[in-house]
Image (cartoon, rainbow, N blue to C red; front, side):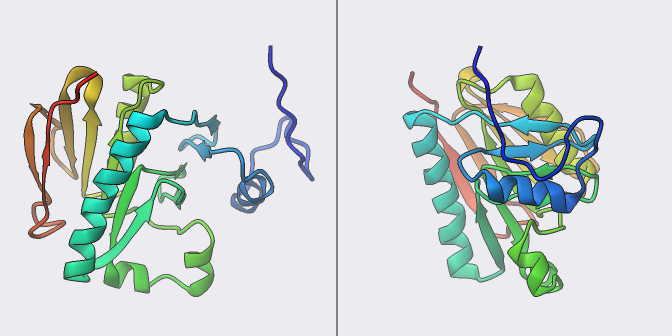
Length: 195
């Protein structure tokens, strides 16, 4: 059994972390990747391996290149935690927020964990990720106002597409994905993953 000691300035026993306490916990432990679900439960995220890390960066780069060309919003890496309206503090593998929505936040809100649901999120399932847990996370995004989400699942060679107010769509790889009206003109081809 491995023991993990976190330097805290408050008692965690029987205490629900405030947003500020969660922020300080993350700042004081930069080597940890933490999230909170909508019920406030702390989630310690596993690191990813080389293949997943490479695929995650490649996918995020495509989104960033599209955004650099269109200048329609802001792109965020997997290191960014969003304080979702539904109560969770989540970190998608890649995210995008429409520019006017981002600009409506104060400077302090932008510097900490932005209190906003991204317009688009992308999650890439790694070997250490449980599919049902990721699907629940995607639903939490949609319930919080995310308009479009892609869960790329190399293990099952498929992509799950989540849209606000619609039933999830599942398509097999290879897949040609469209940013639809959320990311106008953004298209991505996801090839089958070779293990």
